[in-house]
Amino acid sequence: MKLTRKYKILIITGLSGAGRSTALKIFEDMGYEAIDNLPTALISNILDTNINKKIAVGIDIRSRGFNAKKLSNLISNKKKKIDISVIFFDCDNVNLINRFKENRRTHPLKLDLPIEDMIDRERTWLEPLKKINDVYVDTSGFTVNILRKQLEGIFNIDFRNKIHVRIMSFGYKYGLPREADLVFDMR
Picture 1 (cartoon, rainbow, N blue to C red):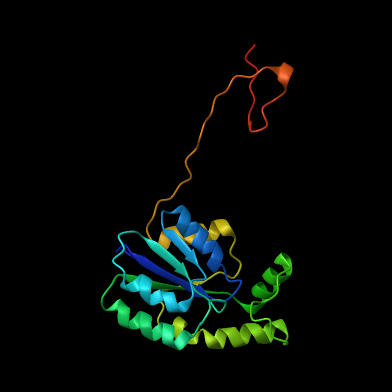
Picture 2 (picture 1 turned 120 degrees about the vertical axis):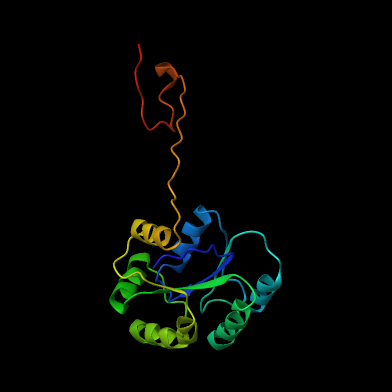
């Protein structure tokens, strides 16, 4: 699925551990202003303001005052007036549990339940936002590079890191420069 129009405001949401924060960093590299964990009371301020920049706003259950039903109603109403898109990140339970183990982080809900029950509860709470999404990304088995390529493909952006070359002269007497990746001896 390729999106041809350029979105001014992206609402990035989804399950904890599914890649939402990583996607925000990728969008920031693509030229978007990224805002993470914005309190939901401030969302309407951003949506009502006349913004001439591309903005990516990350919202999930950690956001203060999070209510998926109210948020989905607000976004649905605003979609009629402004250029806004919702990207929903999902992942299967096995990969989510492994990601929490690898990062040694606790689930943001911090309930006294097994982690699989917390993930299922979060999935239920996020259902209203999942229903109004414009882009659904299942990150099960994705690496950061695969996610970047997936987002570039969806948003039709050809993003390549620029190569920076810096040539410097030095003397072996003082040692190799620390920031050097390649050293050529030209004697």
